[in-house]
Length: 120
Length: 120
DNA sequence: CAGCATCCGGGATGATACTG
DNA sequence: CAGTATCATCCCGGATGCTG
Image (cartoon, rainbow over the protein chains, first blue to last red):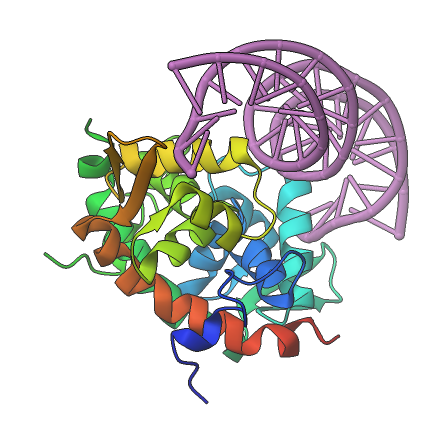
């Protein structure tokens, strides 16, 4: 089911509306840390500690909060193993991979043009 | 010039680094209001007042600040006409259109799945 | 190792009034 | 009409300490 360009606008031409579902998901997924966590998981499964190290500068609090949101939205799967010491692995769900299929081209373009863009 | 997936990661596997150019542009472009302003301009040129009405809920302060950032990054062009009353028009630059070519598929997918995603 | 609870400061954001 | 200036506020997010 494809949504046309005109289909993503509100009926009166506004760009969505305050508090509509699309804006909410946008805020989750395009948040400061959301994009980076999703990108880190794109290469494969990671443990909590690995994730913390891969996403440079993220605090434990924000990692936990970001992961909870992304898991609730069904983008990330959390698997906890009953071992000592505990091991928890995070990976993208199918939905998460669908999302990243659309997000990666954007991030690659930005990464490739960032320096030029900021060179004012 | 295409950037491979591996090319968008830091040398040590981290997802970029704190304060690197890519993260900065990411923050500008994927900010709460940045995406919505860019989306509004995707359909064509808009005046200040039209933009304010199209992007539901944005304050004058945030509209001004968002537009200044996007203009400084070269995504948005500002044209001011020496008339009374004043008229100022905003539109995407070529760079802005390149960006939106990558962003639209993402936003369309999110808009099409938002309700399902939040239905927990 | 993988988190959660708590506190708290500051930048992001909003509301209002005003101006060229 | 298209902003700026100012003030008030909120909540994001960092730091720290603790637990199963």
